[in-house]
Structure formats: structure tokens, C-alpha cells
Amino acid sequence: MAAERQESVFPEGTPQTGMTAGETAAVTEEPRPETLEAELERLRQELEAARAQASEYLDGWQRTQAEFANYRKRQEAEFLERVRLNNAVLMARILPVLDDLERAIQTLPPGLQSLTWVEGVFLIKRKLELILEAEGLKPIETTGKFFDPLYHEAVTYEDAPGYQEGQIIGEVQRGYMLGDRVIRPALVRVARANRPPESSPQESA
Image 1: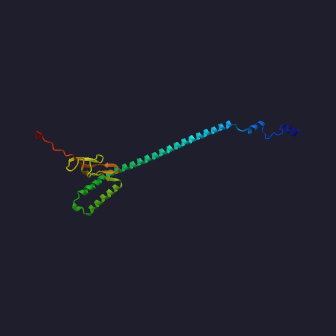
Image 2: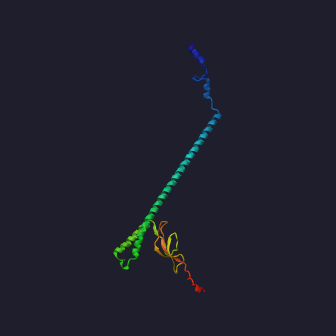
Image 3: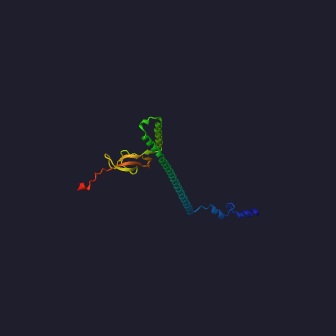
């Protein structure tokens, strides 16, 4: 009798899966086209959002890299400028020593120039000049040049036959540059235009 009741519960041809007929139909039913299209559209939107976010992150990273590179360049430029400034200050302090050596050599009596200690002074001066030249120090040209306020400082303006107006007659103190920076202008005497002597009132009459 139990066997007969079980056969009446599960008619012939009904799959015995533990689910009702409605549930089985729902599982085997294919998704509708409009459902697939909606799912594809959702996935497209998520992909576009992910791409936009990735692009934003990339732009931010690139900006950060560029800002850091610019910062590093500024730091290097400021460091080099501080080094050049410190070198210029040091050179300016050394120049009076070089001036004293040059004056001592210029005023040296000719009869003493062959002495050993005098030759040593010449050697010391030359070594000092080579050290300063290696650091970028160079004298400002004055011979045959015209006065330039960027490089020269006029001590006197003189009437000088044979010279044009504004031409440098002589150098009073040598000037120097460190690279493209003037650390001490050259003190020079400058020629002025030759003016005819002024006539007296009697001569004019």
C-alpha cells in the first residue's frame, strides 16, 4: 500500500529531483534578451567607470612625478647658486692678497729679481693664479677696450691724445669675473673728448 501511494505522488514521466514542477521550469527557463542587454549595459558602465578612475590615477601620478622632478631641479639649481655665491665671496677675499703680490713684484728693484727668494715669490703668485683660474676666475680685459659700466669703474676721465672718447687709457686695479659674474669691476682711467680751449672774453671781442 505504501508503494502504491508513492507512485501516485510522482506520476509517470515526472523527474524525481526533489523540486516542484514550477521550480524545475524556472531553472530550465532561458534568460530573456532584455535581461541580457541590461546586464551588458551595466558591465559597460562599470568598465567605463573603471577606465575613468584609472585615467585619473595615472594623471595624478604623472603630475606628482613632474612636480617632484621640478622640485629636484629647483633644489639643484639653488644648491649650485649657493656654491657659486660662496666661491665668489671667497675669491673676493683672496683677491687683495693677489693684488699685494702683484704690487710687490712691480716695485721690486731690477737687481733683486734674480735672487732665489724673489723667484719663490713669483712662483707663489703663479700657483695662486692657477688655483683661482681652475675655479673659474678670470681677469677683465681693459687694454684697448672701451669703458663698459658692467665691467669697469672709471676712476678719472682725462684728455688723452691718440685715444678715442670712452677708450680706456690705463688700469688702476685689475677686475675679475667668476664665470659670468663680475665679482670686482676693473678700476680704469678713461679718455674724454678733446675740447678746444675756451677763448677769453677779450679774444672774442
